[in-house]
Image 1 (cartoon, rainbow, N blue to C red):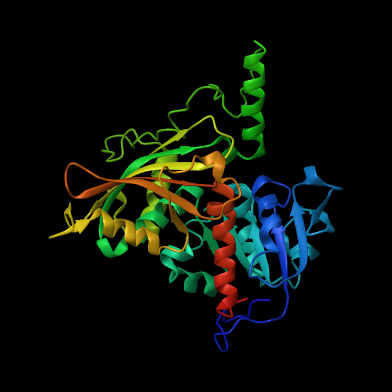
Image 2: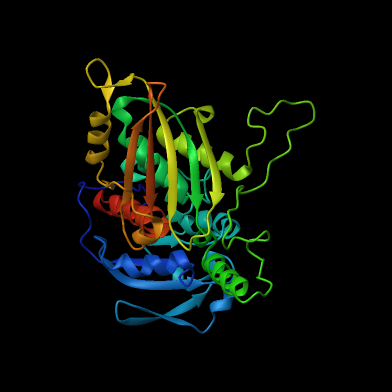
Length: 365
């Protein structure tokens, strides 16, 4: 279990096996986490799986061993599954995370929330971007891994930190998979139904998604009576994304402007970004050249450059983000690029494991 001080004794990782709890183990994120956990640097010892009552009686095979799935019922302090645990991953909906996350942390385990559900209650962390925030998380016993789009955008912006980004804008294409297994299943059913000239199911995507594009994600909040809204027309999901990226990168929230749309793809995350830099972007003689931009991107450990950039389907199961089509903006002080990643393996699961690994290596687990 985490020590009360949540501080390392000698700066070295504890070699003993960790007791790890995965809450939401039967969902898309939880399942992907379990598929790679034993291949991570973490010394996995006892593994305990927890899911909603709908998974009662189930068991899950992990690394050749079958594990019983415990049902999440009642407050965490009443559930033996959390006793003497070292690390708890939360791969659950926002309302569930906010209800049980702080309570689990009070019991002693380090809690890593996946998806930014505990923003405001715990520091948002992408180790490749704002490692310093882990100190606060370790002290409080709870850390929040941001939403998948925020992980991707902040990783790219942070790679150009030495060139002083001033503003980031662009469009992110989400996939049906970001709505979980239900989203991917409905897209598949819509495709089949339309081929067979039947009415497609429209529960997850009420306006349809197969062979189409959903050009808005979330709802547009109404400004209080008599007050001006500087983000008029932007949805709550886009505002949340801007806030996450601003926290992670240090940019002012008003300098992060990102559109969200949903493409008819089963998985993956794609972003067309415009990043404004402090120095003029010219041939490199008196300012910043494209070669320097590419060099900074190449130095980022989780970014791979490739032209043309692979589509999201080809990146399923890849742990890195792919960046390409780096171009100079005609204004002379900005760069255009495409960034593509697996929303699960890179952004959700990959970042959560990176957080836990950093905490363990620092002797905080």
